[in-house]
Image (tube, rainbow over all chains, first blue to last red; front, side):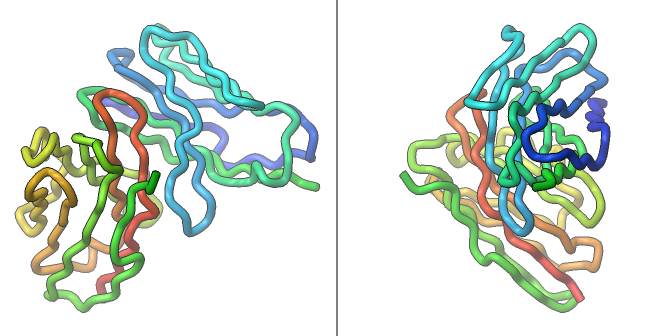
Length: 110
Length: 112
């Protein structure tokens, strides 16, 4: 059974800093891994999708990496802004269903 | 292009009542998924449709939950009768194949 862990559960950093969010999973037999953000009371917004054959994906200030063999993914956010404050979720995909972690609540301090 | 929409946004019902949640996927997306998050837990998969067919319903908690997708367009998820432990946020997502799943805003269900 796939288990996804995100550490830390919460993180506060000053504005402008670069930061890394971590995601680990127990079963490396995955199709893809997706990073989402969720704002309070809102739905999930997809940030990046990494296919199992890829090592990383980039979108603007975001960079996600995937190491299937070690069961790890990281989401790197450069030059953080207050608008980046949200809960970040990673989800691993297998057989077209996603298994989610519990998320990291990120607060950017102005 | 419209995103995934869900209705209602919030539903409050009493234990034993019936509730029906609706999801309209992004136009052209054959794959439709239901997930839910109960208080304090991670989001969990419920089921997956490809067009009107149930591809995987391994996450459905019990037979009080019934999902349909008539005509391969919108989907409904009915809970009958509702129990207290059914409270949570129900998310719908759609996708084209094994690619990005796009999520709706969710329906918050409260069972009293």
